[in-house]
Amino acid sequence: MKVRNEQSEWISISDMMSGLMMIFLLIAVAFMYQTDQEKLAIANIAVEFEKSRNELNRALREEFKNDLPTWGAEILSDNTFRFNEPEVLFSLNSAAMNNKFKTILNDFFPRYLTILNHTDFIGEIDEVRVEGHTSSDWRGATTPRAAYIKNARLSQNRSFSVLNYIYDMQESEQYRAWLQTVLRANGLSSAKPIMTELGTEDIDRSRRVEFKVVTKTEERIYRIIKEAENLS
Image (tube, rainbow, N blue to C red; front, side, top):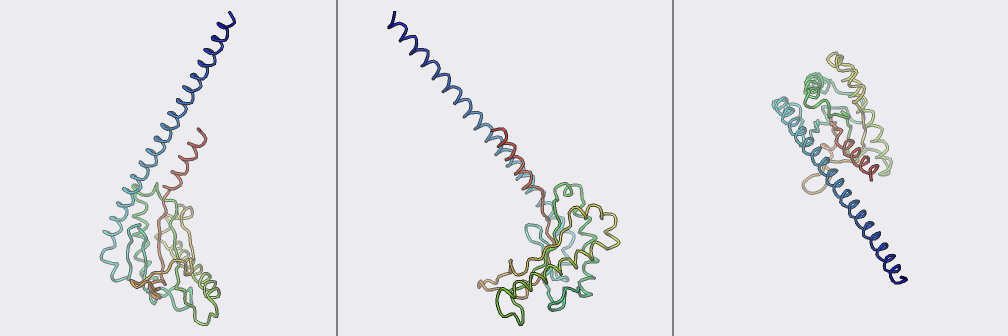
């Protein structure tokens, strides 16, 4: 009888362990499925983002293909619209825009707004950044720090000058409520210089203004990951 009870207890423990192993296996499978679902959701977002980005790039290039050489501008693969001619943009060490740059903006920005507000793109836009960039050079600066700080102030003032000008355009009036939610002015000093093929800084091309579209893709991916963490 005693032996029978020991065997019964052993069988009971064995069954319990088997049950626990099955539970752990189900949890592992569920976690793997959840991870796969998470990866699939992120992959779908990435595909949608790439499609939307390519469509926006084609629309920008088609709209401005005849203007880019005249303006000294270019459109990058990430849809950054870059104005490269420093002597056209601002006077040296000044945040006051040259009249020629104002004329360019008068032509550029209303058409740019129309494209961005196309239904295929508008829902994905999180920010429209006006970025001011400088070279690392500053005449009279005695240290790299002094040059960086002076250029940081200058680039911020320049980006704000552009933002202020385009926001007040008559053509911007119908988009003003939307612009208040997305339009930003960022001065980056010499943090992102343009380099030559030899690996040295291109002083002239580093002095530029860029319009950059930031999408909601990262935010959506972050939300998926957080939801997955809450379920785990």
